[in-house]
Length: 265
Image 1 (tube, one colour):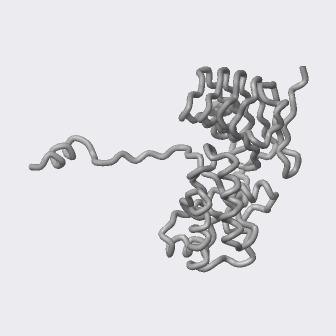
Image 2 (cartoon, rainbow, N blue to C red; image 1 turned 60 degrees about the vertical axis):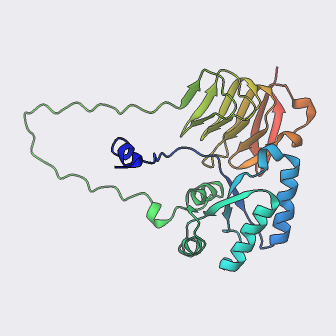
Image 3 (cartoon, helix red, strand yellow; image 1 turned 180 degrees about the horizontal axis):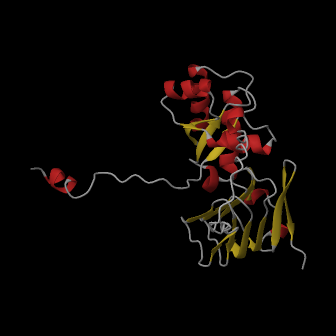
């Protein structure tokens, strides 16, 4: 028996786990591979540590017509030539699914739900709320004690993180706000489906409203972030006024604009 067979009898060759992975959604408004490459090159040059070789999902939902396989390959090559790495397609339609299969790429469907919520789109029939069940028929009274209904406990609305978030670490508050009672280091990432509060220095990345909540906000006491994002709208360090560096700030969305201002003292 080989060494590999002996080890396999004890443990499997691979271990598969699912977790939150920071992948950007790259949505195209028109088909122009050369312009796409040029814009990506500009972003990578402005913030190479943030955008250089960053994994992105290509969203073709805004194009007037879905490109064919050859045209999509040209887009993927433009993304690579610009300095980012395309890892799949987003927006789950039957045509996109077929295109993704022909390109041997995964399809990321969750971005569709985020954009639909952000744009106020109506729910699809499949996602519509089910009709209420019919009222129960009247029944004769019984002299039997009915069990007392217990109100379900609601999930906490805030996730607290007391330790520093160090470089390479990621903290994700799924379905709630995130409160960090320490610093967020360079290269670290804090993500929340709601708002983010950092009671210390924010030097890494903060992504609030990760599932499309445009009402989410970001607060911190010492602002030195590499990137802040709310519901997919972002600003990087190089785009932020110097007078905000090191200050206590709040960030929020005003329509399509991500605003950052000092907190009132």
